[in-house]
Structure formats: C-alpha cells, structure tokens
Length: 214
Image (cartoon, rainbow, N blue to C red; front, side):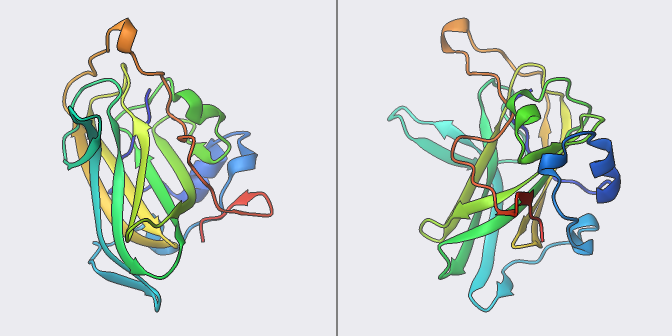
C-alpha cells in the first residue's frame, strides 16, 4: 500500500488499538483527549489558544502541472493513479513558528503492505491493518500547514476512507473520501517507489522518546 489518509466516523478505542499494535512500543503515543476518540462536528474557525486560530482545513491531493509545479486539488474522490500524493492543508492565524498535529487514518479494508510505515517508529499501525496513527510538528508557512503524507499504490483497497486531524490536541477536521476504482500501476520507467511511511520532511514531537498526543 502507498501512503493513505482517511477520516474516522467511529474511532476504535485508543487503548485497544495500542494493545493490538503488538511490539511497536517505541511509537506508542499518550492517550489523546476524549474529544479525539469521540469527535463531534467541527466548527471552524476555532480558537485553540490566544495566539492560535484554525480557520480552515481541506483534504485533497497534489496534481502535477505542465510547468512542473504541484497544485493542491480539494476532493472527496481520489484519482485511481499510482503515485497520487494526498493529505490535508490547514490555514491558521498565529505567531507561532510551528504547530503540533495528530492524524488518524482508517482504511475500508485491511492493507497487507503498509510499506515504509511498518518500520516508521512514529507511526502506529493496528494489528488488523486498517488504522494508522501518527503525530508530528510542522512549520507554518504563510499561515498554512501542509501535510501530504500518503501516496496511493497498486493494491490499495477501494471504498470509503476516513481521516481525523487534530491541531495541538484539538480536533479540527473529519474527512471522508473515496477510492472508487483499483489503482492503475505506472509503467516501469515512471513507477513511484512503493512506500506508506513518513515523507523525509516529517518531524515528530517527542517527550523523552515517547510520541506525544496531548
């Protein structure tokens, strides 16, 4: 599987997920807030702190342009193409240089191959292969945080995906999106590396070596 992002309507109890994750103790985060496990409808803009307002969060993918740039395309249905890079963009008002995010991705069916994510100590994958938890710090650029972590790959399950996003421990987005058709493989000469883990620029907040959620 390539990197996947989804939003969850009914989240698995977090403690049960950590038990199911087996020996991935190095990446076990602290339990998130009750609001994270039972997300209510998010109303934005949301003032998280006196110096931090989250104005808008969008889900989408990056589309290559003829000029060689990448445009963000908001969507609820991903193109079934190998190498599609997808995730979310958050717009905010703040004087902070960076913010801490949390993400929970749920697949429509178990994924047999999570690629690099299986070896990424900053990602927790459930034993049933359907859910991935991650957290990190992202630098704010022009009032935006862009986190495009997952890449579609051949064999990724079709159906409804769910992704929940929190900023500084506060739920800010709940996305549901679809992959309606099997992913088309690229020809060998242009095939993307198969991976599902963090991109090279991923920065994860840590507290004495433990992944921190809140």
